[in-house]
Length: 135
Image 1 (tube, rainbow, N blue to C red):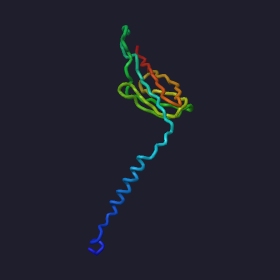
Image 2: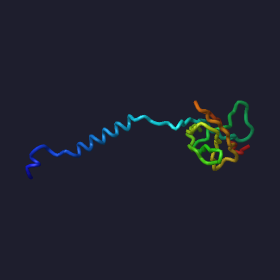
Image 3: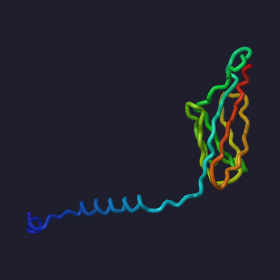
Image 4: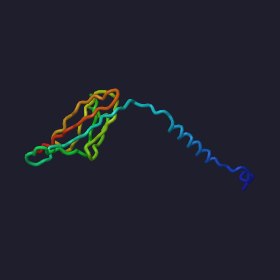
């Protein structure tokens, strides 16, 4: 080993690590620019699911889980999509405007397309009822 290794130790990796940490901290504290995304939230149900005549007070609708919900623009292009949770709930984010919400069900006879207007401030709430065709 030469004289250079006996003097001050060479630690360039520590400076690189320190610089990387400082850059990451600065990025984490940088202001986030919003694209004015808002939320369309709702619930999808499927019914009827009861066999035979429905009794008074009996609900024949169930939460429709794991189905894709799409937010479509005026041209029919997909702006956002999500899958419903076990309670049939979903949330989609988009800019303010006019859209159509469509349930992409592989097995349901009818799921209506729901027009929705997302306001500049706040959220839109939807309840979508799909018809199983079961009677």
